[in-house]
View 1 (tube, one colour):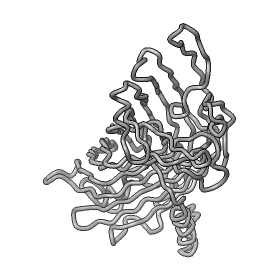
View 2: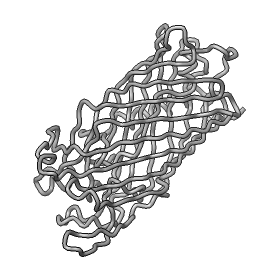
View 3: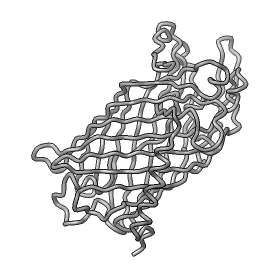
Length: 366
């Protein structure tokens, strides 16, 4: 059976590279929603973590994904950002002056995973965006963008055999992001005087970013009696500096859109409800967003770096070959950090954040 990580030395070398990437993130981390263009997500758990929570109805050693099996998953994510922040301070005056800018985003992600063997799998993911943006004082003058986003392909391996006798394991993954999403969508808007202008829509609702990307991610779990502790994270490195799209902004340092890195992570615990083997609850912390400076390449151009930290409650229901999950992250910290143009021009831009996010997913294995 094919196994690209047969030796223990190769597995730990692979893990060491992934952890090095994770530990060498920029000094000013960021993750967020809304005007901060964070498109990447991160899973709560993989197939084998869930087997550490319940095993009823399964054969010994059989996982949600067994060798030579497929899994198809559809995820839906919604948020409405409108609260403006400079640093960690909310600009409440924006609501009083009716100058808030609103983003409403519907994101659907379709993914297919093939498990080559119990320890190695390949996942192909394609997001679809349906977004709109408008000012609080001019709700009828909206810009829109929709369509396929940037497709990703990631290979992942578990470092230890599954099921693990110690009921713990670590998976690491590497992959690529392809610039399949449109990053130069334009709309025609009408001004108060009746004139029309055609220009690129704001960076925050563009389906793509225009760059090839490198993905590094990990998953880890440890079962402690009936509770399973989990951690997972993903970092997307975009080596390309800018994508050539004019922003229409007055400052020369922000004239072209930046192709920014993105990352997300989660950590917490999951446990079954009493006397129920098919329904579990989860509770953790979620962080996501965009750094001020990229891991590789230039960080010039216009971006809105920032981050959001959320309490992340959820439910997971499994029956037969089907699994449903529901999460509703609620932020307790939102920060808009300074971009490279902000630092060069000695200023601090703002960004809008959401009050909550709704995330629903369905998966089925074959």
